[in-house]
Amino acid sequence: MRRDTGYLAGTAALLLCALLAACENPKVARLRADKAALEARLQHYSALVLAMDSAGIAAMFAPDGELVNPSRPPVHGRAAIEKFYAGFSDFHVLSNVDVLEGTTVDGDTAEQLGTYRQSIRLPDGKLFEAKGRFEIAWVRDRSGTWLFTQVATFPEK
Image (cartoon, rainbow, N blue to C red; front, side, top):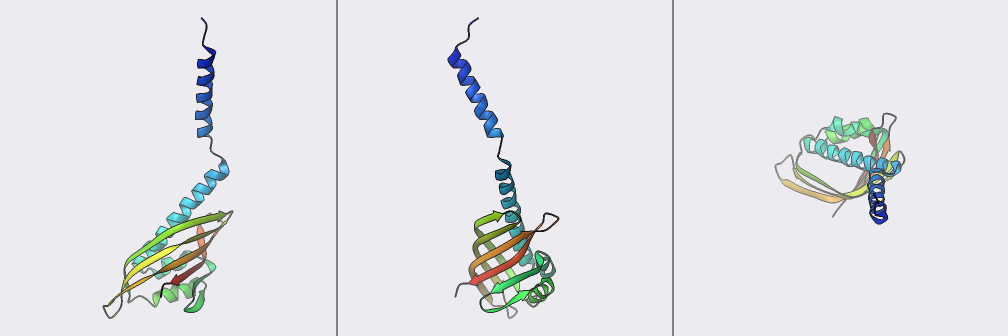
């Protein structure tokens, strides 16, 4: 029984393509996993901001992490960051939307850029809309958890 060599070559090529598609470069797979983990951490941060969970927000920072905004001095360290956010306990965040524009990963460090928009009820009951850009620097700790080393916000005027 004679087989068509064109048929066999085509079948072999199809199998090879299927095998190659199933074999992902480990570096690409790691990068994809890191980006997904960072996006999940950013969503967790957004949820903590909605809840105004100052302790939870501070725990997302590396021990020497900082919060930066051009309109005030930087806030350094978890305890200071928690105290800073606790100072807004009378504010009610009605919505917090972070739009990620890009994530860059380099080993155990990463950076995210994007925009934010918040709707906040002030202690006097008035509504306030805050929006602007953010830049976040991350570090992966020994346990594999991504932590903020710096969160910088640049409000629109």
